[in-house]
Length: 147
Image 1 (cartoon, rainbow, N blue to C red):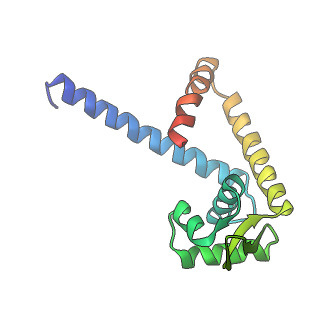
Image 2: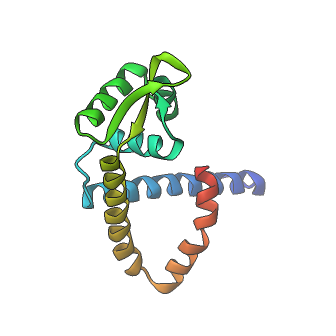
């Protein structure tokens, strides 16, 4: 243990950041487990990215999702087979295609968000009021972190 106050503060902050990371990851896993969707985690995040960012080239989608193009190609093949996404010609380049969400895909995303929000709401309601208040106060900072 160090007696340097600045080093101690940095250590404490690093510990808090680690706890935050673990807590967010555990909440996310719990929501996925308690409100299953029927699509893999990679598929639902890719579908959500396409819905949010508009029709995307496969390579751009792979880059956003942090996977290689062949992996994303397999994910998109599954989404297309499930009818939740489709490949359409790229108007800027006739040799390429874009991936876009279908109406069925939008329904899947709405349902996933609703069911996971419902599970989260039940868990949040069980927190003591002071913890709920602090959690809600942190939303703006969490939204800033996610952008």
